Length: 363
Image (cartoon, rainbow, N blue to C red; front, side):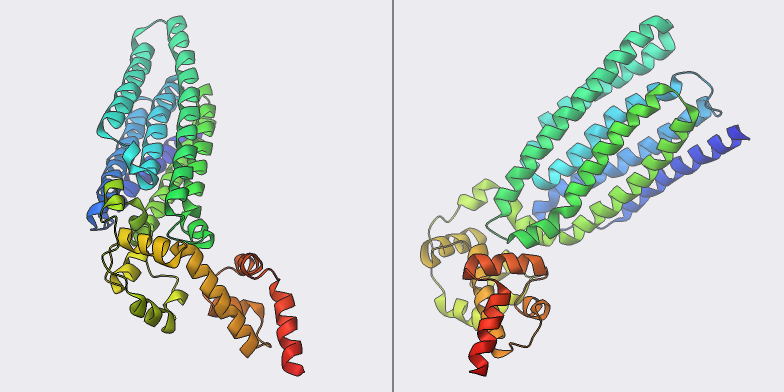
């Protein structure tokens, strides 16, 4: 009975991995030329997830009942190396693509492949005591790899937040990148839990393999969601040479900027910076330079400030409106963030400002 359950669960998990890979393959990638590494990551994920599903199928073929001692743990460790590399590279290519160079990827693939080949060969070719030595050394290397990838992600994530800070306010950054943190730390948790599979327990192997299959499906959904938000994130991922080009302002367009303000374009939270720059007949680098040299502050700060000014106007005109409505009408999707920014730019809380507005109106 237990053998049948083990076999069915492992087959279901393997099938789920393969189906996830097929769904990824069918997902339409952004056509923007700057998304080339995103497309590369998607293709790599597609192939890798399918291969992982096939590897599990092969394990079932070799050991359908999960009775061969240490085989499951050996394959789990070999796959874990590949998973750690796969997920880390897939995330890094989205936030700091310049890190994911051909040389870096090739070195990582060569190292991971060499370790995996050594593990598999040692299981089938070496005496049990020699295999244990290789096995334990592989576990140490795997833990070291997780530490290295975690450090690399943290540094890259900090860099990415700083890079896009001049494009968006904190609310938009946190909302747009929240899934990225979730996916990486979830992947790290899965990587750590994979160590439990090394004990060779059939029940643990069965449970974690199913959990991994579900996680791959979750990862695919997050990756697809990123494809939908890519048009917003891409401007901040432009190569440095594009950021430095046209280091002078070709022509100022204060009239168009004033018209944009009058039409309340600053309330549109879905509009990318490059779209606004296009309306002003500027490139994104020129747009940023214009705000720095002419306006005297970056676009993000300026837009928050005029949104707060507009919120004050709304409160004065409609003192009976609840704060939630004022926040939404002035371009803020998060009320707590609105409270924070209102205090920062006004030096007074929203509640106190509403009381002042109400008292002024009544008098």
